[in-house]
Image (tube, rainbow over all chains, first blue to last red; front, top):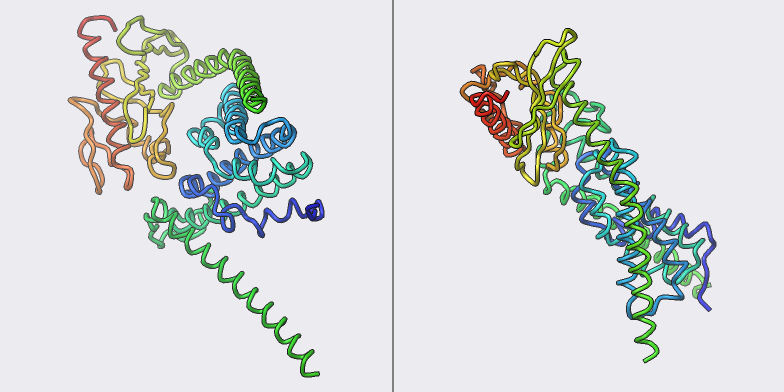
Length: 218
Length: 187
């Protein structure tokens, strides 16, 4: 019997513990490509979360019917169907939104977060847990894309969400809007995240060692 | 053997269900999408000819061009929809022209898939406003890195030179087509 974590943890773990961008290093392509502005990042993350929740739910529902050998093929078809439906509905009913998201929507099919969560989680867990896990991962993705997008937009065009933050005297760093800026920002943020985790681990080990030392000497 | 059979059945069922679902959704969506596109074109016609009240499509196979009339049904100019290659894909735009085709009233980008944050600046006011009142004779030229000096010049966007040049090329091509149409007396 597998140890089950509390149900609310299925949601919160996606925010930081297994944050798709910084911890699982999944979905790098959209992360790098669309984060030229905070708004773009949010739109992409919301669209991804939508597909993630629905496909996770469906895959979790049919997980016992799909033979192991063809599971990936089945997941891809299910995900692609959802993305195409979302795309068509948006084009028909919300043309403005569809125009803004434009080329990003079809890209969601190949977003490995969705397949990753389907394979690692939804195929082994109940529908309720899968939905929570999908929501958590989507939110984690949303947070990281917003952070990266804000940093790039701030340094690259002086604004955040289209509002000017830095004064005109600040010369925009063009490199931040170009692909190179995405790699630089992502690398630095990942470095910060990792060093934070490392330091926390060290402190934990140290306190553990101290505790045992204390026990022996006593 | 049983396993193989199961695999075939499951994959077939998934394929049939998603295929049927997509057909239905597409059946429902495609007329709506077409209507949206038409409404957008209509909006574009008047966006690039702000004084226009009525429009009439000119029947020609070469290009998509509309006559635009004001309140009193006087011809005030043309709206020309034209597309061409941008940096990453097709750019479709609408340009308003004076009756002699030598002056642009306004320009609107209808569809584009340029680089977000760089090429997409062609849809923003600072770039589009350069085309207001621009002379198109003999053709539009672009200039890089400094303010335009001649009445038929625009400045390219830093970091999106190819997208800017593409817009100029598309407009030039479209006007060329419109001119040859006018010479033949079809306008």
